[in-house]
Length: 206
Ligand code: PCA
Image (cartoon, rainbow, N blue to C red; front, side, top):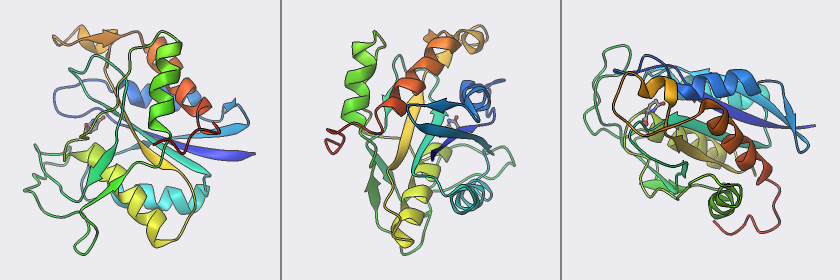
């Protein structure tokens, strides 16, 4: 069965939990629409995240990659359109503070997602889940991981779709911060719906 590598992140900054961690742990080893889900948690660490992800790509040999991250404050599911060659933002979990440096010195400025992001938004909305394409994944770890995966795919001429989806806070997380929130079960269902779009015939409509 084809495998989809589904990555989430550990908690970071002032977020005591990360709902993406729970999603990938719960969905790990589940099968959906002919896809076996391999769920993995990536550290919020600029020096380790890319390495970890690249190792997973070569170990798992997935037929698609969907990476997930928390965007506390957003009020809908947001498939990302683009990743940029830049690390910036606050300190990571190891205390490293990026300063706008490139992710890959001679890498391209950016990559577009190769996931069917328009189809994902349409299907999410058809299922009653608010969603919207995002035109920036920021410059923190989420952008970093999206860029690293797309770079690795290009370097190795792997013909697989890859990209990133930011999700809002869960209710549990919103108990400790003043942000919009979804039920954890709805966040998980949203990601299942997105995985269900991987085979869509119209998926070239990025
Ligand atoms: N969100 C952060 C990093 C980890 C996560 O879940 C981001 O948006 O970059």
